[in-house]
Structure formats: structure tokens, C-alpha cells
Length: 290
Image 1 (cartoon, rainbow, N blue to C red):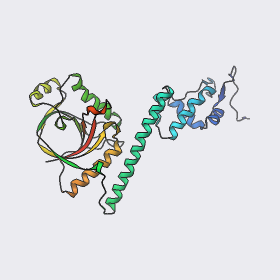
Image 2: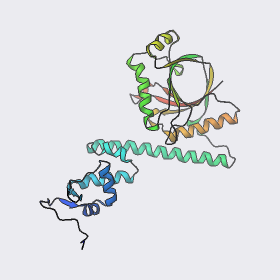
Image 3: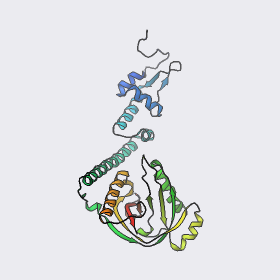
């Protein structure tokens, strides 16, 4: 008759405990431990070759509790994998940054919910000074572009690769917002959609043909003169999907109230700002109008 205890094994170290005991000590379920094993986050110290029974070292408890705590605050398994390999101080800095971004995302979602409720109840959403919508006129300008369907988790890498082409070739930047690179969203990029998106890099008129020949994988086109409505955000590193959704709702709501017809999709504009101290560019969300 089965005893309900793990099978006996020879030469078992006193530092090893069964999966059930380790689960109790780590305040985790055996199911969670098996999942972390499959994900490569927490592999057993020993697996019995005959029975497949898992044994864990008590030295693994600290790692197990770290993984469990990170899951409790909402960090994904994919994010945890490289995180648990970091020194404690680097891990701590990552958590501070991640939590700051998470709180900003929650605040943006709360604001988006408020906008939707106002709309459903026939009210005009309130807007703070920071969310003020401004207008500007942009001249016709040549630009090199690349359009693609991009999954959400590849969005950042795609943008870095696109902009990196010009940086590596030392292509001079056209000054001001006229020369700011931007991405146009013709469709949502999230868990449900992959765009398409179009990255655009304005270039000087006298350099356009030469650069088009230098980058044959890119498309050279001239964008007509137009007006843009935009909302300034600040550092692009703090701009996520939720913040973008809030700004988009406000811009499209403004366009409807002003009876303005946007052309193309929502734009995310990246502005070079030397005052950011190397933290990266600022960004704006914009809508173009004929």
C-alpha cells in the first residue's frame, strides 16, 4: 500500500528536501514548483532517475521566495527569468523602475476609464494642463519610411533597428520637430493586433535621393504640408500602451468636437532633448490633418 511519502533514495543529502516539504517551506504549491521548473526559473537540485521525483536544496529557498514575491506583484515569468540572475542591488533597482512604470500604467488606465465613463454618460472629459492639445503647422518634407506588421514584444527592437541605420551611417538630423522621427500606427499594436506601423525619418531635401539609394530597403516619400494636433508627454521611456490610449482618446475626441478629419493613423513623435541627460528623447502623440 502506498505510504503517501516520496520514495526512498540512497545517498540523499541532508540539505535536500522533497518537493512537498520544499513547497511548504517556500509557501508555494507543488504545481507552481513544477511550472517554475518547466520555465527554467527553479530547477530541482536532484531528480530521481527511476521515479522522476524532485528533490530541492534548502539553499534554493531564497530564490524560490524571490520568484514567488515577484509573481505576487505581477512580474511575468519571462521578466523574472533574467532578473533572478542579477546581483541583489541590480535586482532592487529593476524593481523600483518596474514598479514606477506599473503605477503610471495603472494611473493611465484609471484615467482612460474615466474618459470612457464621461463619454458614455454624455459628459465632456476634463483635461489637465499637462494634457493640453496644441496645434502646429508642418511643411512638406521628404522622409525615409519602413512599414511592417510588428508584434507588441518586437515593437521596441524594430524601432531601434530602424533608427540605428541612420545613426550608424552618421546621417545628420534635421533640427526641430520638422526633423523628428516618428511612427504612424495604422492599427493597434498590443496583444490583439500587430499594426501595421510605419516608421518615418525626415531627411534634408538635398540628401533625400542619396540616402534613398543608400537605404534601398526603405521607401522615400514626401509628406504634404499639414497641420497637427498634439499632446506633449515627456520622456519616451515613461510612455506605455495605457498612456498612449489616454492621449489617443483625447486627441480623437478633440477632432470629433472640432469636426476635423484626421489623415492616417495616430503618430508617436520622438523629440531630441539634450537636457534629458542621456535618458533618451521626449515624445508626443499627434494627429495629422489635411
